[in-house]
Image 1 (cartoon, rainbow, N blue to C red):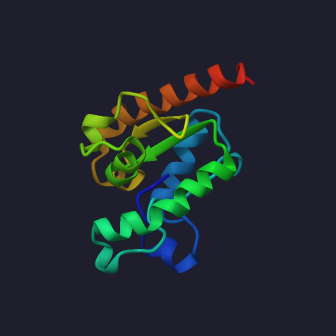
Image 2 (cartoon, one colour):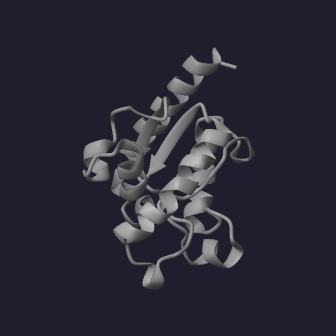
Length: 148
């Protein structure tokens, strides 16, 4: 789960289709997960004007829909990409740097926060930490599936 749609995502009506989406696909491939095998969504469903951070009212307006998506899909793992996604799933008002590196639970589903791919494109020095998060996602996936 990302934070919200960017310009390309807003045009196409699908999450993670721009440059950040291309990086996300490579990140998933690096841990042997096919993008087609995962459900990708955003915390807010509409792009805020000027690509600003979502307002609290926008976050709360979209949250019931997100919770219902999670309930219906029943994911094995929730991966929260970026601050707003991680704060929404953990319920903690902390930066992504403070939240990543630990696991949390949301609706009885494990949640692993990590950096948003768009952030990694702007700040590649954080890719090593993101790689550590990806390895944890893979370990947890193998634990839940028996390594299938």
